[in-house]
Image 1 (cartoon, rainbow, N blue to C red):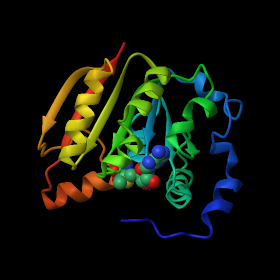
Image 2 (cartoon, rainbow, N blue to C red):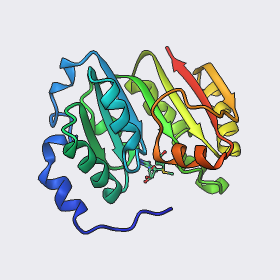
Image 3 (cartoon, rainbow, N blue to C red):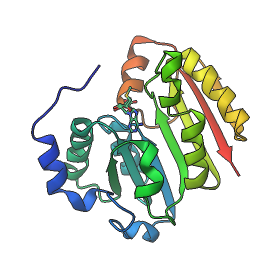
Length: 205
Ligand SMILES: C[S@@+](CC[C@H](N)C(=O)[O-])C[C@H]1O[C@@H](n2cnc3c(N)ncnc32)[C@H](O)[C@@H]1O
């Protein structure tokens, strides 16, 4: 469901700019951490919040196009005093321009990305070739991409694109019923109603 516009969102993001990645020089503390994880399309941020609580030694970056969702996520992180989460509020297609060139990730999570079902919109999918080309550049060698979705056609198309683009399939599950770790908002919602979900984990050398 589309997030309703909240007028406090943009001022909140501006007021907390120390949490925002706006340019490669905006953050410098990432090198204090050995593990780096990126979530693209984090929505309201529950997955990031839950992961950051479990993995306190990992540096997390949440990416979100929608400013209201981004501010809701940031508010949760700040209110719970979670120190290891930073945000890029913008289109993931610009990641290479805003991230420091030395910032590389052990894993990229794509939790229930928008399926963009119309063929003419497929290039907007976060698993289309143009996005995979970006992931190849920002992953550490052997870094992983984890996709979860309830959309079978997106899933099959993504698996095919990962393989075509030289990613190695590490694990693939159709209709998984138990989540192996912290869940996103969508995953939690779908799990409760028993919706079919699919996940694939790939790596790139
Ligand atoms: C269906 S929601 C899933 C939210 C969350 N990951 C979850 O599982 O609960 C997809 C989110 O991806 C964001 N998104 C879509 N395309 C994006 C892009 N190119 N860059 C950044 N965020 C994007 C949308 O704004 C939306 O909040």
